[in-house]
Image 1 (cartoon, rainbow, N blue to C red):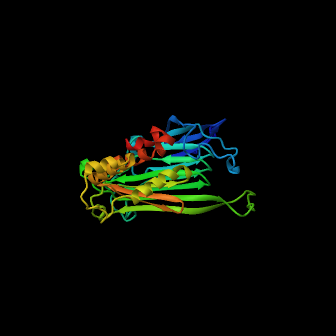
Image 2 (image 1 turned 120 degrees about the vertical axis):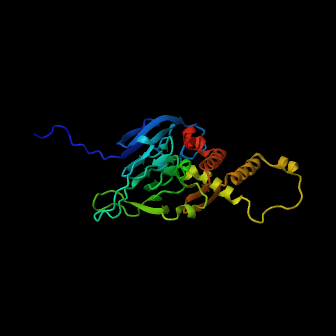
Image 3 (image 1 turned 90 degrees about the vertical axis):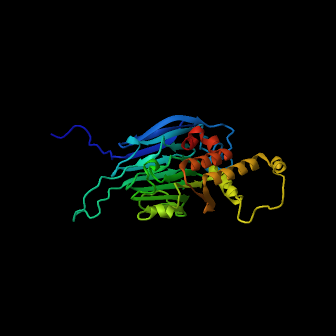
Length: 364
């Protein structure tokens, strides 16, 4: 006798998010699905200041593409979790996220994502390479004037673990994406220092533009043109990862795209250009107390930050690439990287002002 119940079509580790507007201007999840071992937990949304400096808050009236796009009043906060705080060997996380025009979303975590090592399987003729990797795939579509801030805690790969991560962001005209992607050396308290088996990460940002062609012959819909703007890949594989990392305990990337993150992107590039250079020291005798009094508040902050970068061993770089901004940073200790990130993001105020405290939760 056939079952009267519909067949289950859920896929382990799959998540689906669709953020849309509840009239008149309240972002709400029209779809929020997840299956074990993935868990998605919404939290208290951030109320957006009507006088917010972000260009998405009040789309200009003279722009015909934004006439019917409401200004979001809140920014939902979503926690991306896994049972046990990490991924076991063989676990696979797959997420699809869609942000409707004008909405904005913050995604973070409640702690480091641990990558557990696989069981030790014997070598056999039928299985000459018994490696069981963990993986995470994220596909995001950001509509016009929508904003995504993806800022999780770092990934912590255990010894002999294998992990692959692919994150693809499709961003329409005037959409904005900001993400932080970082990995640490492992469980330092247990003597692990880049003892992982392999770690592969790839982030892609694609620009989505209206195509010149009118209609598609098959489906009768307007086609769109995709352009790859940034592909950032990191591959850490044995042997010799620890030697190549050369006392680096954390390594990370920040990618920024879109008008809402324009001020933050320019801030990173400007601060990098103002870093002290070799041979740039002024050797003339000066009165340090008098010179300190002449400094503005921004200059005093910059001087203090540069001193802390030396103490914490933080190295970083930033540049504009094809309408995006790429920031790379590294430090011997994860806390040093956290302090640097918190200092930079709080000084610029874009993240805290547009996404609230939830946007900075990953650097607490």
